[in-house]
Image (cartoon, rainbow over all chains, first blue to last red; front, side, top):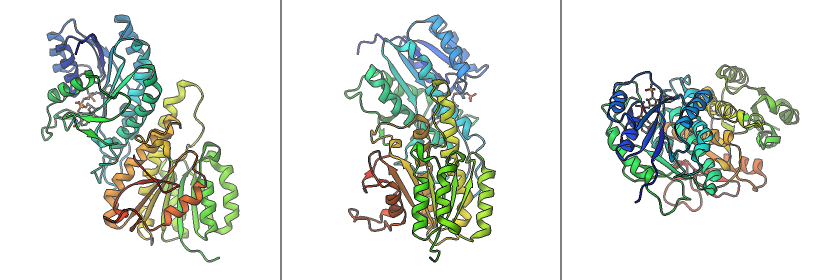
Length: 240
Length: 236
Ligand SMILES: NC(=O)c1ccc[n+]([C@@H]2O[C@H](COP(=O)([O-])OP(=O)(O)OC[C@H]3O[C@@H](n4cnc5c(N)ncnc54)[C@H](OP(=O)(O)O)[C@@H]3O)[C@@H](O)[C@H]2O)c1
């Protein structure tokens, strides 16, 4: 494939899967606008040292419209076009069992970050995506799949936020596909990342490996672009 | 007419926004049920007629479904009247109109999510003890068919569709958790163009699905599915 696309924005790029996406894109010659949420993370600093010109940190909280707008401005000051927008930032909830009393205190935050964050990003960054690859990518999860739901205790609101994201992407795709935009929904596998607060060593997939598989999927043109589906790190399609 | 059974019908939104809750309340009352109705404040006018038609058999509560306390106090009042509820229905209705200006769209989506998706979860949790004591143990949702991600039906607002789709996933988790305890589940999609939604919902919510036609392999109660008013199954 001839690669002409060269600029990408990744949200939640400080660590975990987002950092892996940034690294993979940098290695492939992209300029990466990296949405950073944390004040400091040593792995991100190392990546900056490794790719001083290709990696552009952009402070970003996807749950805040003001922050998203400011991130857009920072990016627009650097470039007039983004080829690839990767909505990766996400948070986990732990709301317990319906029989033991649910704790829904993080539910609104999860919806604000996981479901609405990507929508704020798409809405705001569209002016930078009128040319080039026009590809909108979303990190979803098997947790959002209703058909193959295996959980009996949740976390309800994490799973629900990913289903809501899938729905919003469906509606966004209906609106933007006719304007030449293409869409990718990705389930990265069970990752050895920091979603639970500390590195999850019980998980099965290294973030870097999933990031490589994800970027391969994001960059590849599909035979049928009109079909929206969730594809995982092994190329398996998950039903909604 | 003797009271047959008791139902809680929550999440009722204004008819002008496509809500079928008031019609559903009327239908249950006409069949002799005792109905407790939880409605979003904006649906007050629509529910009034249904309540007066039901005389003593209907009690309606204006509920802020984003507030667990409000749902709990309605449940406490209901528990003063009945010792059990047989059926739980949640309408994934829009609580109030979508703002016209773009700026308010995501705030409205968050509100819809709180009232519809989390409201449904709060309500199930709150009413479970009364449902445990009931004879039917059935959880039902009346939901917009546009909230099927897969089916490709177009239309509906972002907020309501996102919230309703999220409810479907909560329903799947609840199915896994409560089906082994004997609970059964119904999701009815209100698909644009299909008439008589309240009648169809009443019929479907009460039908025994264990030997559904076209499914000879296993009890259809052991699958979490969505059907429309014409009996067609829809993908999620
Ligand atoms: N981990 C898994 O097994 C798994 C499975 C399926 C899907 N996913 C999805 O994969 C994506 C990446 O997760 P991960 O496993 O790499 O988790 P992670 O290690 O926690 O990384 C997520 C990154 O997003 C940041 N973030 C949190 N809130 C944000 C906000 N409001 N705005 C911008 N950035 C924010 C996080 O910062 P903080 O660390 O400071 O919060 C962190 O840097 C998420 O969408 C997640 O839902 C993960």
